[in-house]
Each structure stands twice: as C-alpha cells, then as structure tokens.
Image (cartoon, rainbow, N blue to C red):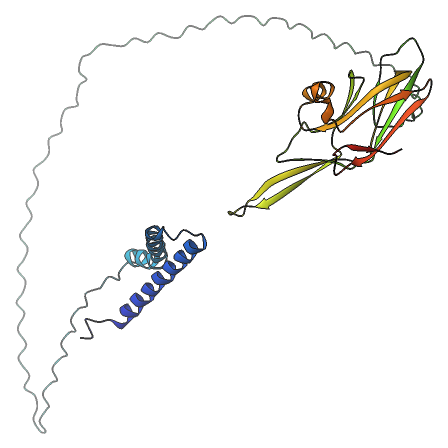
Length: 329
C-alpha cells in the first residue's frame, strides 16, 4: 500500500492544485475590477495557461537536469579468490615423508641448420629506349643601357603672406531706445501731418480650445487695411486620466497679458480700430473682422490722431457679461 501512495507526490500535487486555485482567483478578481465578468471562460483559459507556464518554470529545470546527468558506469568486480587451504597439522614425533625428485632428462641436441644456396647476382637493368630530350642553353637577353636620370627641379618657394595691419575696431552703435510697444507697424507715409496710435491691453484675455491651435492670435486692425497679429503670451493645458490610466488632453487655455502695440506715421484725423481674439487663420479672421462679422469683435471704436502726437488706447480685460474689452479711461 505504501508503494501505491507516495506522500511526497501527494503533497506536491496538493500544492500545485492550491497554486492553480490562487491564480484563478487572482484572474477573476482582475476581471471583476475591470467589469469583465462575462469573460469567465477566457479567465479560466488564462488561468490554466499561467499555471502551465509557472509549472514549466518550477519543474522544467529539474527534468532537464535529470535527463542530461550522466549515470555512473558500474564496473564489474572480480570474484574474490578462494583462500588457500590450511596445511595439515604435523603429528608429534613423525617426520614428513619426502617425495623423490624427478630425474631431469638431458635435452636433445638441436638439428643442424641447412646451409643457404648461393645467390646469383642479377644483371643491372638497362634503360628502355625512349625519346631523347635535348635542352638548349638559355640565351642571355640584351640588357638596355641605363638611361640618364633627369635632375628633379628644386621646389620654388611660395611667397609668404605679408602681415596685414589689424583692422580698426568697429564702432558699436549706440543702443536705440525702442518705442513704447513690442508690436508696431509703420503706416504708409502721407504728404500731410502724421501721428501715432499707442495701444495697451493689460488683460488677461482668455481663449479656450479643446485641442492645440497653432493659429491662435490676437489681431488689431486699423482702418480695415493694416493688421497686427499678436501670438499668445502663454498657454495652459488641462488633462485628465482615462479609464486606462493614460493622460488625455481636455482643453487648452491661451492667455494674452501686458500686450503693447502701436501704429506709426498715421495720418492726422479719425481712424477706426478693431480688436479681436480668434483661433482660426489670420487671413480668414481679418476678412471676418472687417466684413459682416465685425459686430462679434471684442472691441470696435474710433480714435482721433493729433498732429505730431499720439492717441492712447488702454484696455483692461473682457467683461464677463458682454465678452467685450473694457476700455480704461
């Protein structure tokens, strides 16, 4: 009965069955966490595959090692030699009878060896008649007299460059004071008097998009002809994690803060100024601002340019109710 049931094998089998149960429990817990309870059959197959892989990792090295280990070669041992029998004990007062030694007969005399017959010397082999090869002496080839070597012309020395006097140091131009405003445009000069228009937008002005918009800009149009395109001063991305733990972009907010712009060489008199923020292309936006969509601009107005002076336009931020720029007087 002990030969049929091996306790070591039984304990190992119970251990692997328990391991299979643990793997199945973990797989079903993962499916339950992912709300995939309908894939029960897939979970069972996945558990069996994982169990087989784990069983191969645990038992495979031992099986492979047992197959490749060389078994010791058994050497046949010689049977032990029998022990010599003990000599019979001598009786007291009796002498052992000595056996007579055999008489050695004289060995017979060897027979006389036969004398070898004299060997007749063989006549020397004569060479067989064949074609005779006549070798002619090699004629010496006429040697050409050595030609006179032409003398190699001496290399002409290259003229060394004469040192040039050091160039006088360039005068660094004096730094020019930039006019007020980082974005400026010079209007076509006119024959009459001109002035300037100074525009300051303190902001912040916000524009929100669902994805990255490289064409996001703020545009200032003067008289429907000249336009300044100003890119955002900064932007901020809003992201959230999806069900797979990946970061996903939800929106992008563009900011325009502390914007300074201006127009130079503007003719004296009234001029129209339009300001708007958009995410579309500048050409399309300019046509819409100056056309039928001008009522949707962030600000529309007129400004009076004095002679040899400047007209100031200062804005805060957009009104939360009207979504229009508020001018600071």
